[in-house]
Amino acid sequence: MATIRKSITFTNTLSNWMQALVASGEYANESEYVRELVRRDRENNAKLYALREAINEGLKSGVSSRTVAQILKSKEAQLRRDGRL
Image 1 (tube, rainbow, N blue to C red):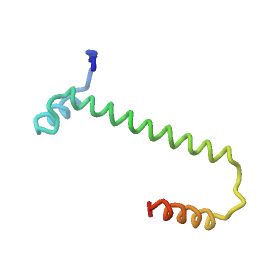
Image 2 (tube, rainbow, N blue to C red):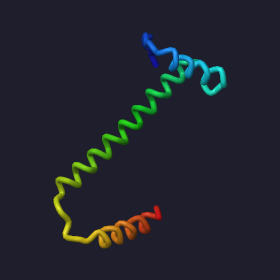
Image 3 (tube, one colour):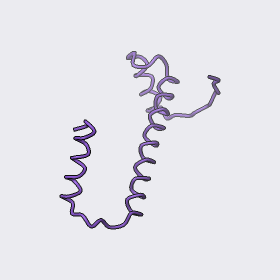
Image 4 (cartoon, rainbow, N blue to C red):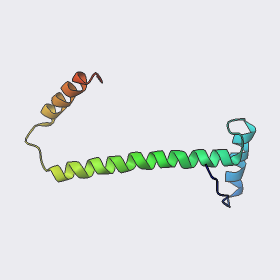
């Protein structure tokens, strides 16, 4: 994979934090730490996007005629059938 060099400015506090992580052996270098943060951020944003889509889908579906207890019972049965509960 091709790499692109970026220049980023950090405060002394953040720089010291990254240096401490590298010194502890948690990361090989500061770039590795920053790349890990970007990967995590991408994953979190993907989860957030999926959650927002689910909320929008729920809002568009309207009000259910079932009670909360009925919905929970139905979902529990589905999870049991799927072997996830």
